[in-house]
Amino acid sequence: MTEKSAPTALSRAEISADVLLELKDLHTHFHTDDGLVRAVNGVDLTLRRGRTLGVVGESGCGKTILSRTVMRIVPEPPASISGHIFWHRQNGEIVDLATYPVKARQLREVRGKEISMIFQEPMSSFSPIHTIGNQIAEALLVHERVSKKEAQERTIEMIGMVGISQPDKRFHAYPFELSGGMRQRAMIAMALVCRPTLLIADEPTTALDVTVEAAILKLIKSLQAQLGMTVMIITHDLGVIAKMADDVAVMYLGKVVEQGPVEAIFDAPQHPYTRALLKSMPRLSNTGSRLEAIRGNVADPYTVLPGCAFFPRCGEGEQDRCTAAMPPLVEVGDDHLVRCVMREGVAHGRGSG
Ligand SMILES: Nc1ncnc2c1ncn2[C@@H]1O[C@H](COP(=O)(O)OP(=O)(O)OP(=O)(O)O)[C@@H](O)[C@H]1O
Ligand SMILES: [Mg+2]
Image (tube, rainbow, N blue to C red):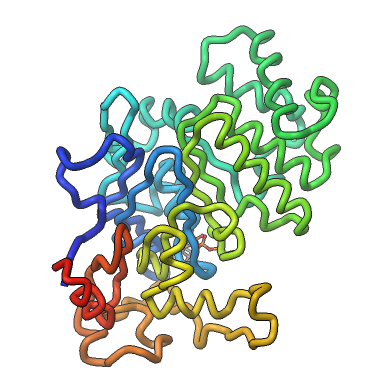
């Protein structure tokens, strides 16, 4: 068996220059009156420069909290964070965003400037009493030493870049004056106006109809190419992953259970959970076959299951092996890792161990 805790476990010297963000043994736990919620529970993940990582998994598996943890915008308390969020700057500097106090200046400098986020809810991201132009320009005024006039000019340029017509007029519009799709574009403009290195998009199209969804996804892709950004896109929709991602991380109950290049995940999924997700997804190529729902439900977040958390819903596992201990991530192909004891033989078969 090739055991490799993740690409993130490589030594400093081995880490290539294309690594942008490394999460190592990252935990975000919420201390609530009803118990401990392990929303993110030991995530190892690497993002490479200029690529798009898709994070997928059922509702409640920790996707949003993972991305908010990277930006350190989960409420602490009730949350507590442990592990590492290594942020690699172009100049070779590596900082661990997990080590700063939540109100640290260093985090404020990273947020919005180096890493920015498109949120699940566009309406809640804008204040209803200020124009969208002023709100977008504010990000520039906070992060860059620019005059008000320059901030306005750059904002109007950005509003135009995200495909909103008459950007100089729309600068003065209030959020309620825009349609849902336009608000989403305005939010993308706000996220991109400081030209971040990493854009995190949390379900950027969930609230939109399919034609607007296609347009927004295309827009993110073209802006990524123009601005040379790295993108982390979070979704429960594998169709969005297929359109957007170079690499995929599949999350289940706070852990990454499989990660790899998008082709490997779609063509040779190794984790029973990934396979179940794929079977539940409609495809144009198999319109004749029935879609299968994943049996059972995600366990409640307070319960700690011994071993693999997916075992009760799996149907492929063996009680003794699967419940003995949390399976390690094992390598089953190039950059393809899976957390399943039933796949250890597969890794063995490659002779890479
Ligand atoms: N403030 C909080 N206090 C306690 N538990 C929380 C808090 N915020 C989130 N959680 C819990 O953390 C877990 C992960 O939630 P998260 O929002 O990351 O899921 P998700 O994968 O983004 O789901 P969805 O696809 O529905 O957006 C859930 O069990 C959720 O109830
Ligand atoms: Mg979410």
